[in-house]
Image 1 (cartoon, rainbow, N blue to C red):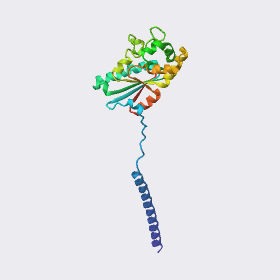
Image 2: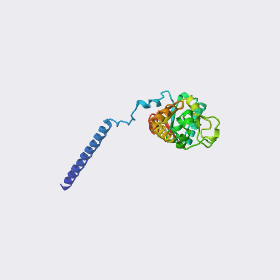
Image 3: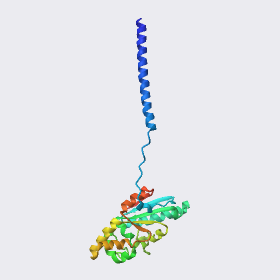
Image 4: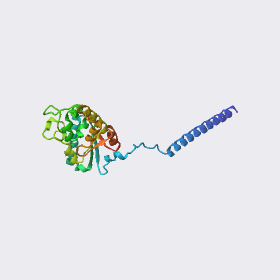
Length: 234
């Protein structure tokens, strides 16, 4: 009798544990199924703004943006942009039209977006704020040095000019925020009106250059639209 009683007790204990295990498995399975049937978390996408649509080039196969903040950095960007385009053709058979290349001119490099006319008129205050000089004369430049011939190894761009890259489709983004700072500096140095000077500078940009609200914003928007970043701090 006692052996039968023990055996019956053990059977009941086993069945109790089995039922508890099955209930636990069913509970876990239910959670897993609920999770698998729930909609996937929405992928974050950046907001799009019409004023940034100039960055889009639907036919482009590769996109590259250069960020520059100084005279030397901008010169490096011109040189590297030329290398990027030239090598794509030589090694990949791609034309300049297959590429989307943007060079951002902000902070101290912003003045390099201004046409020779502005350098002839405001060279001294522009150079003072930009922190560079003409390597030949050791004085403030009278022209935009990155559109000038005859400098060769004296400047980081090594003869690759803004105009030459513009002809290949490279775009230049000039910082509006920095341009206002340049306008104020010029006004202080010449006794002029900062707002009038701002209008003058923004109306005299090099080929394929455009004003953007801020260079750092253009940098952000370019990366959000698929541009790889090359930093040329200088």
